[in-house]
Image (cartoon, rainbow over all chains, first blue to last red):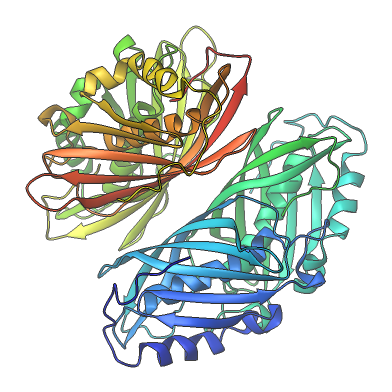
Amino acid sequence: MSEPKGRFTPSTPDFEYRVRSSFSQQSVMNLIGAKIVKVVPGEVDIQIPFRKDLTQQHGFLHAGIITTIVDSACGYAALSLMPADASVLTVEFKVNFLSPAKGEWFIAKGKVVKPGRTITVCSGEVFTLGAEEPKLIATMTATMLMLQGRPGIMPG
Amino acid sequence: MSEPKGRFTPSTPDFEYRVRSSFSQQSVMNLIGAKIVKVVPGEVDIQIPFRKDLTQQHGFLHAGIITTIVDSACGYAALSLMPADASVLTVEFKVNFLSPAKGEWFIAKGKVVKPGRTITVCSGEVFTLGAEEPKLIATMTATMLMLQGRPGIMPG
Amino acid sequence: MSEPKGRFTPSTPDFEYRVRSSFSQQSVMNLIGAKIVKVVPGEVDIQIPFRKDLTQQHGFLHAGIITTIVDSACGYAALSLMPADASVLTVEFKVNFLSPAKGEWFIAKGKVVKPGRTITVCSGEVFTLGAEEPKLIATMTATMLMLQGRPGIMPG
Amino acid sequence: MSEPKGRFTPSTPDFEYRVRSSFSQQSVMNLIGAKIVKVVPGEVDIQIPFRKDLTQQHGFLHAGIITTIVDSACGYAALSLMPADASVLTVEFKVNFLSPAKGEWFIAKGKVVKPGRTITVCSGEVFTLGAEEPKLIATMTATMLMLQGRPGIMPG
């Protein structure tokens, strides 16, 4: 969970503001209790607590909820490196589930692997947090598309 | 959207009951308003209405919510062909997003491509429903793992 | 294996010529004995014989060789719908392997699922051909990128 | 490209022998000129030179050839941690292509992310080697299945 700080250069000084403003408009994040807890160039972390109403029938977080936070973490990691008039769309992602999603908190860490004018490739990891050491429970690779001059289309 | 009825044989006569009981215990389905609307051997459909609190910042359904319903549709399609003491786990999935998720209703259709004793491969499609003709907005391929003798571990 | 003919409209009348010319320059297709056996708008089939020198250690075709032909089939299916000055790049793909690749012949069928100005999504299937009925052994979903004005960059 | 040595414990002392013997039977590796250049517990590297007969029509290595070496690197990384009577099958993989595959040499590095009794998840990276610094051109995530008591079925 160590991050190489400063690996990427944001294209605008207000990248954090842009990311946080957009995040605050994702209604679903409010529904599931997700908070954005880190925004650095090319890296975004999103956290949620365990909640019974987010589970599948065995009391673990549903794979789709894990995916929801790690998709947004990856999308905003990509957006943090884009110009002011850009927006980002998820073209596709793939997620491997390594362990059952049990724990008190879950943190999704999205990072840019390769930024590009059209396509940005990101990787995401989801860890459980609680009494024990953080445990990796899921990994994502996501392909994000930058749109310019169409500010209305955003991640998710 | 045509389905080859009877392509697969369920391994127990009560497959529909097993699928619907398990679905009713997925709390997150209640949170997002999802209903299971079709259960035949190897095929399950799950539907949700558009709701503002499920959106990303532009008023489209969040990719993670689309993924939530199509993951469960695929998982239950797989479960419908499994023995009574089996449960199913999502090993991994990948989703391509073809069009923005706007519409009044969304239906996720999960189908078994290849059942197996250990691994079952499923494909999923998500369509918008509304005034117009159904439109394909996302496709999934999912790898499901059958567990036996561990009834507590289920999809999601 | 039935194909809806004429589902897509090619953007140039010489689409087949463009696809076949490009294919003939993929040296690796010659190395592995692959032939392009069908080119219609949005659909391309590529076939190879079983050969001992294409196998993994148990005498089945290596997953990478299966991937090689189905990637090209998908890439050329995408290219068949693109303008004359366009080229196509594989952004990413994912492949599920359903059965061991044993047989006398293998055919990879690439089809466009959703064409686009920037991104084209394709699906591919690989079948074994031989004494028995064709058997589906692998499925691909691929994301292709259209480049314009850079004719030098092509599939693969 | 730094590797945490000794992160995993091999289940047999002859893991390297088992991996190298199996690799030597993958005929396709000979065809494409691939060599296995590193075998440690949970990590395997496979290298190939650039060769004109492995290219797509623009002189870059075909995506399928890149996939061939990184699939085997991942499969053997998984096998290195398995018992003596086990064999490994590729269930599925996904590959993102980050840059054109041009260079003099290519090295595929496969690593185990999460070993398991049934499913082992691996990640792979492919770098170009040549005059310049190594450049990451592709990433893979692969799902491998362990089979026991069926020694004849192996990676690829």
